[in-house]
Length: 135
Image (cartoon, rainbow, N blue to C red; front, side, top):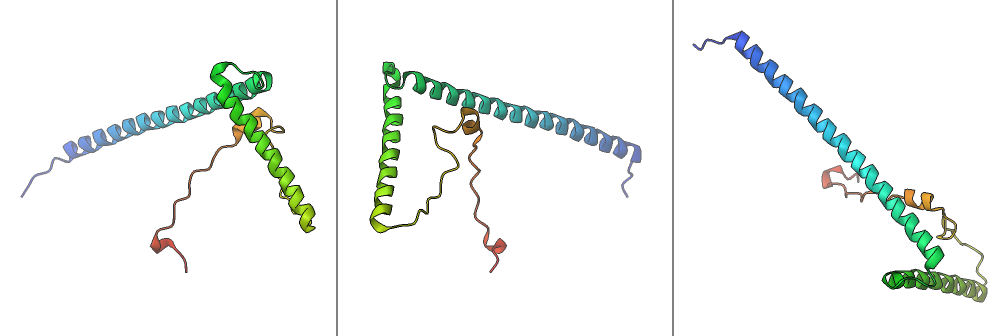
């Protein structure tokens, strides 16, 4: 028959519990710092958006060489949007279609930079497992 020293077992359990608490605190701090980093990265993205909008507003029609291609993409996209809007109006006029426009929540020109930067894409939704699906 084995002899157990309950004092030794109690000390081992206490040590394990203290180690667990210590590791939990470390993991909590790591999670907190990672979350802070995500916030800082978001602040950087917002600043980039503000810089880009300001640059395009000030220099979009005569950009420096390094920015020409990007400014041209923005200008072309704006032209395409206007052409699409005009075509929509033509189609409506031809077919006597009642105005069923679903207006966007904002347009590029109307949205303040700070608001635009706050729009965060949602995480993709994972499909339900077969056993979780309801019939």
